[in-house]
Amino acid sequence: MIELVSESRCIKCNLCVSVCPTNVFDSVPNAPPKIARQSDCQTCFMCELYCPVDALYVAPDVEPLASVDEKALAEAGLLGSYRKNIGWGRGNTNGAKQDSTFQILKQMK
Image 1 (cartoon, rainbow, N blue to C red):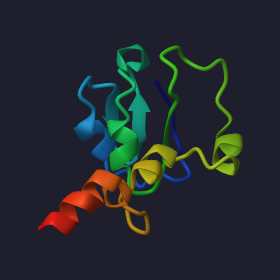
Image 2: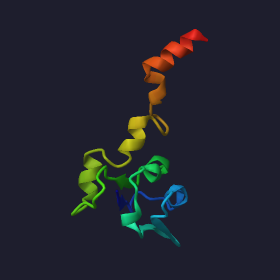
Image 3: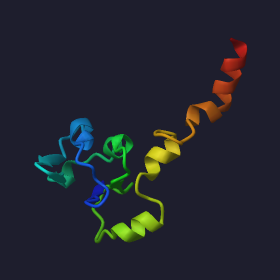
Image 4: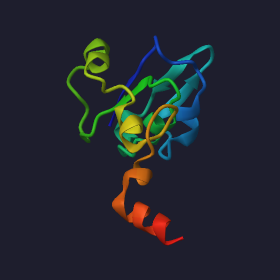
């Protein structure tokens, strides 16, 4: 479930607003988007995937967290961690390129 939009990291691009399939966010003029309908979040991670500055945290749980500590999330490397783990974004390794089936199919060409 979406838990955090970091005000210090957010560049107000509103990509998260655009990609959210359940309309969880509201755009706010000259401010980071607001998590307006957290209970509608389907934990699809689309917002976290598309955020170019790792300003979002989606918890893998479907229930809201009791408290959210941005500093602790950042120190633990959790902001944008889903995007990094699947290989999206600059400087990340595409996970498909490491897949053994991909490598076999590549050699068959």
